[in-house]
Length: 228
Image 1 (spheres, rainbow, N blue to C red):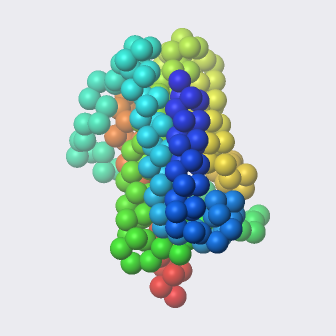
Image 2 (image 1 turned 45 degrees about the vertical axis):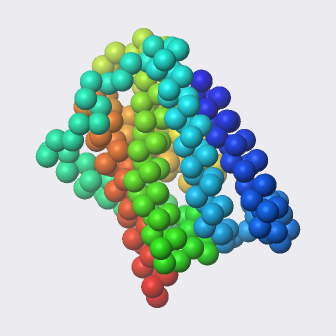
């Protein structure tokens, strides 16, 4: 169901973007649109919204047809959850430090591609989608659906090899879904941490806050570069 939702989102986005590229007479059509280093803001918005729509369909079907019940109070916020905001910042800085010695070219290309030529209000809107919308939908999908389904399939308890298989496989799926080879290792490591938070707290809010602040650090760095 998760795979189906992902594919539905991608297909719907491709169809809608092709129609928009044709209607707006985008030079080179949808093929050029996908290859450009600085896509227009509407390309990013449509891609994200359609993908999240596919996620939402998969989550809904899994709950209604497969009986994947929601975690107890999964989105409840507690004052102590502020520490997860700090964790996200530390996690992003840690990933950056781990990659620094490798001097990878175009390492930051994905985030630049995400914002493309967007400025002003459009850049702010995409920033909010990246910092709030993406972490919410991805945590609901990858931790709330994929990880929990794997955990149930492996009958994984609080400890043991089966739990770690579910954690690692879901983290690899999370990293692969981003489609960025250079960032794969870092994203997989982040996926492991986020799944562990769900195991520890039995909620999605901690992983969401960690994910959101992780993305926020990258956005601050991007806007700082643009300002200079």
